[in-house]
Image 1 (tube, helix red, strand yellow):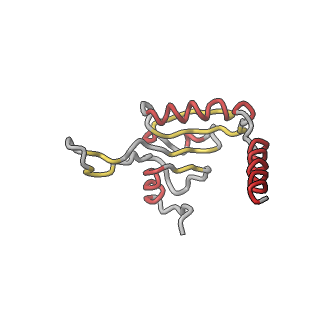
Image 2 (tube, helix red, strand yellow):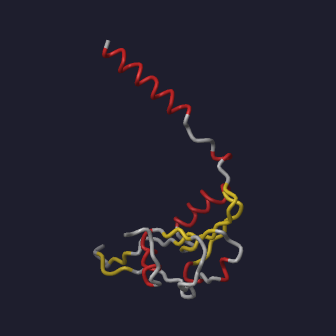
Image 3 (cartoon, helix red, strand yellow):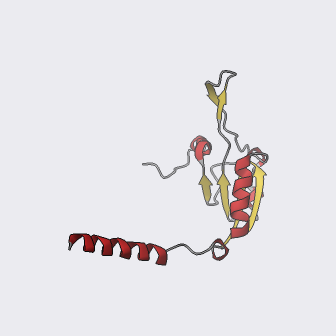
Length: 133
């Protein structure tokens, strides 16, 4: 009796998972214009472009060091990203951290921003509150 109950419960959970499967990517379109600020030649930039361009109302990328508040005029959301910020020596040992810095971004910046990885150092320098308590 117990094995039958477990089997039925397992079958029901599988059916529920299939019913709750996410919609295909074609149906997942956001009415947002996204500006991605990272490193133009980095593979991460290409990956974000491939993921977001077909799913948003607009996608553009800019070198994070060229980012200004004016460059956000046609975007609803900013994604701040950078490649691996750890600078290594010839032996592969970490020496320092090098996070690209948007030179013209100030604490007055008022757009929704997604901060990824080492770019949290940028918001720390501006004394902005993140989701940390």
